[in-house]
Length: 259
Length: 261
Image (cartoon, rainbow over all chains, first blue to last red; front, side, top):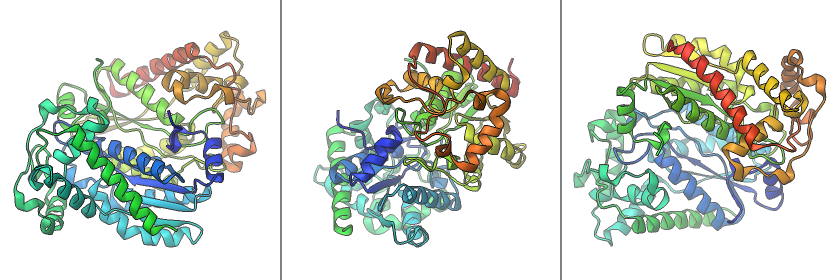
């Protein structure tokens, strides 16, 4: 087994040695603890976030993974048991304090991304002010907006004959397939049911409006079971490919943006 | 297969059903991400929180376990790479948000616990405020390791020939033995080194002073390698008994707190 890149699994001396040997980039992912339909666990975004961060860190070769931030911004899922939501202010403070800790340990770069769409706008909005506070010794880079990720898997799944309303944006074909590739033991396919499958909701030009509607009215008003899309027939092989493509896209964006 | 009690491994429907079937108590444990010497991972307190939380919830039969809160309060370990800390203000905000979220979905009792001593004083100080805010929606209880529990543990180890300074308070014989049960593949016994082993520091009457001094000067001031105690020779069999002792006392305390005797 290759050596772990997760800081929480490492001792302080391993982390110190790794930084000194040039692993000067920390990967900081914001996930969630929130409902993911009747068939996926509430830690779904956290599990996918850790796996993505790990894959990205290994591909980069000069990075370690910070303990993933969870819970985070899930107010729009709060009507479902098991969802834990931070207020925006709390989330931003947690994010900021993580960055200060990483600076103290000598990291030079922090790459931030989300494994939960609800965090995406806040991350983009607050990273500049956090960067200003932590100062010039530490470079912060937020990569992969959730819109970019959705567009990528919609296009890919279309080639497999999966419609955008089936691919979905929450606990549907796309996410469930990824979970079947990562943690099949936590997926109950016998409980998977279609949720909101109105095509217009998922058109790229409507996604922003759909997201705001989720924030205002809560996801429960859009799907009583908490599924946006249709998870039936999800496929681990397709999930593995979605996962790999996403990790590669992130790595490419990082390489294009960090010296 | 054993019944699931970790909320993060359950779907919202499973959680809803569990609450309706009487699992109306939720354990909210604060752990840490902080250095644990040259032989234990920085996630040690978090792993032990899950281990104890899961065992306690199964034993109680009426409880689920919330995702462990981490990072928490580890300012005194920041001299070592890999430690993360929140300010206590942010820690309180996180706890407030957790409890508010959990109060919405039918839990009757929230039990606040800690697997990391550095959280205890602040947790104790802020619990009344959280309880007041949520009064009428959910009952908030605080269950920390009691002096009686700590004395029991010390007596058990003494019987096995382990002194208080070897048992230690951070990454020593006691905690390392527990980790050999919870996450053996993350324990590197070949790197286990003796840390701070001055007997006087570990006498029960001196522990509060020692703790304040470690907050002021940082743990590094007392131990270059971050170990308070001596982990060498740590033993999984002893670890199992230590965890069970801890779970027993914590379950007694929780039963008393939520009124289920």
